[in-house]
Length: 534
View 1 (spheres, rainbow, N blue to C red):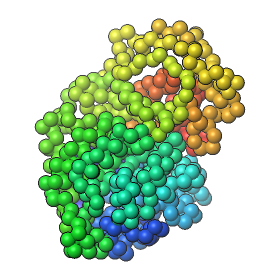
View 2: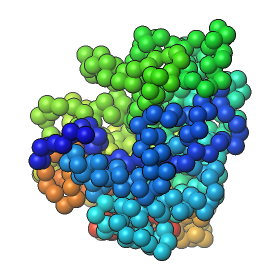
View 3: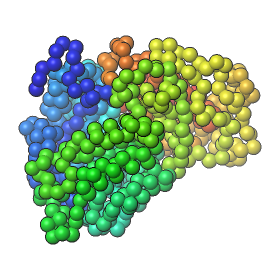
View 4: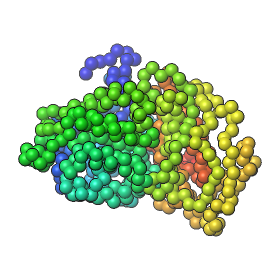
């Protein structure tokens, strides 16, 4: 590895999203349902190959969780990247199919490595990590849609997980059967709802070009993923189907029964997909890192995204997805004046509110995802299509009037089952134009507003708060957009929206290493969430 000069960040794109990603690989374990048509069987984690970079690192360390974390942190430090805000990504298998004791031990060892200290148990490890040198600000797990039960989700919350990625591939039961996937579209729908209700960010792995599909069908699938409220993931990874040595699909290819997309077909398809992806979704990755020597047929280039991005830059208005608009991936930005915009959509039986801090060119500085689960009859006349707060980096200013749009409670729409609701109206802190203001709304039979680990109907949960740009060290005031108050303004706006929705308690699914940040905003730890009465 080339040693960078002092203060020179090598491979800056690694941390341009505001965090330092540390990927660790689970030891090989065969899938319970068998092997999918497209997966190789090469004595490494299923769907991977021995010479993939992440697999080679893991194999050299015998898949030891702690050693993998330490090695990745050391690598980032050598390249002069900050390592105090870690996004831990546990990949390589269906996490929830591993032995439960192994799951806990593996996650604990990751925390111990970040803490540089061995703990007695996972809760102690998390407590230490809240103030550690390398803090876990996000934790991602991967699983199958049919391996994502309520108990799995509860365990993930105990581990401090904040994001779950599902191996969806396509939403077509006929193709699932053809490729031996072993689950159904209903499993995808159910897992998505469970995860969303618990507050997790949801990622889909999608695979265009599967046997039985075609370009039109793949495009129709993407359109359905983002138009049908049963789906609508927060993030996607696009992995076009490739013929890999050792996979059953290789036999079909040689028999002339399967033909993968060409490079041109793949490129054009992904360009069209990126035009479909909405503003609230991030395209995390395009293409797998499969070494050419393990490829029998299909696109071998892993840097295809570079060409696609250059093509799309010719008309940036065509693309709304998050990564394309992030400040970290847009050089030469001069306009750092931003405003908070609000996008609402229905998903999995609840209301999703997506707040984004953007400039006039739609460059993204930060975002927040708020979910109001199962909101029923309470309606507030509150129009905030675009929040009226114009802010400049380093200086916080409200709009010209300093007020929000008028808010009026339509009392005739309040749920008539009043014995289950307690609505406190506080006019003393009303703003201009507000006759009444709800400050609390909760089920008196469950004062916390939640049953178990999932929010009850009418409850609010913040599923993500993220400020983009080159990662900055904790406590620093660098030249970028981090640590300039964007996150606090997004949180403030979310709390105001919750009040307007008649919800008096907000929960945040927080990375362990970010709990201190939320405490400063008045939140406290309760049942694995940071909670605040507003």
